[in-house]
Length: 130
Length: 490
Image (cartoon, rainbow over all chains, first blue to last red; front, side):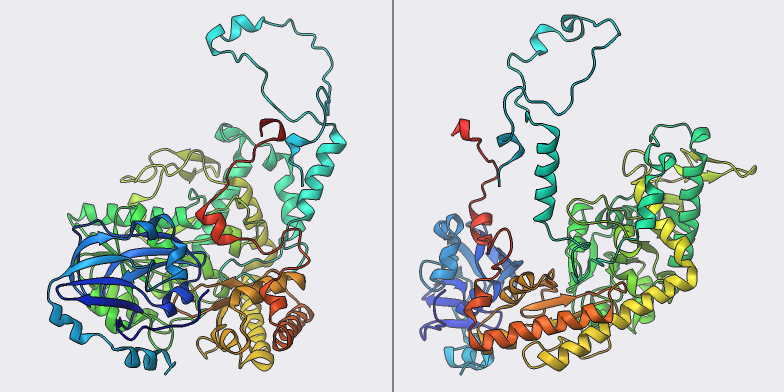
């Protein structure tokens, strides 16, 4: 397992998800804390391309040796790409949660919705890790 | 260890039957050529001592309740009295054929009738079916009965509520029965969040499935209000009997307002279980659910004899399995109920709760800082600790502690359940363990924590003394090898 890290350029959702917003689109994944809490991921079930995601609602499932967990959408939008590599080799979600272990790319309904997410300092404070 | 196929030698036999005195019919007359195999089946060819040693050695590699303490939360791993095995092995029980005519199986039918009466009394609900063969099967029966009840009233209710502490079987059953799962939150006290329940219990909801005490080991004192909310919405209230061992003979689900209850005969009423069972999940229901119960119904005729009435329940949902249920489990459960009696069952529950609270208090003494209780309340049945502070302070996770317990000769508690507690450990000591056993177990936990202060690597790489060491669980799930090739095929 990697050491804890929370990149400054990402926005965070309290359910331990991150979003990398680039204009009208964004990439979603789970944080280092989330992958550490669920343990070794053995299965990742992404949504189909074209699925409509709603902020704060579950859009995917990950299964670890401990449990099946739901992944929550940090923002609303339509799935335009899913990470097939994470589906084939879910261990990359543990190894590289912000890079190769991304989950979906989304065309955002409203980029301004991102204002409701947490910046890195606030997320780390929530974790008691400031 | 070799498989049974890799033992023995060609032509070796455990038993040779004497020549038959009955004229043999040629095989060609019995099985057509096209259906006959061309090569003989590849079966183990071993002597009797080889067979016996193989399976005895295999069994020694297992951990079982007869070898040691097994505090697996929500599983009620209590001692199985040997008396029950003797009774179950009596020829009239063990050699009974499920197709035997009722006239020739009066004793068995009477036992099942009496067991049903006893379970009805324990549940506080008058009508019982013994058919379901597992707790989850009882749950499925409960939801099918709920649907039949609502359909007759012309109601279509697509949702079933389950708390976020529920046993995994509850949402699985909901999905299997064709309903949609809606989760209800947990309050700060560890019970059902009443505001959340009120908000979600509407005309679309068919049922609330509840365990009480719940999987945090906490009895929900709001149960009467919960029942009023659920019934007010026109839904049924289902009791998951997995934790009945804390309340049998003390309070009754029927008196709390439940409509349908399942019993885990293999937990609460002693049975060897785990590793495939068989289990047994009879249900008891209220008057309004009775007409839909599974047929056939065991009937006591006016002359005191018994038979099976194929149309005993007028609006029955039908059968849920072949024959009448796992009969051997009925014998053991009935033996248990008769041995203990009503007062004895209540005392068993009280002792189970006392043992759980004693173990909880002792662990708080020696490990309160590293393994705090998830909820600081008197517990019923079982209790939940969090290994999160231990993980942060010592660098060993709940899984590592669990694995290290194996080296001390104990089966670990349930780990990582309930899901809402971080690094959860769920302990259920049951009533059949002595104070000395509980104290020795506490000492083992204290020793593991002290050892981890010095060298956490020992726990991280545990177990060190078992036939197989730390398993690659993630690898097994990601790339399962489910077929072992014999040497000659490789």
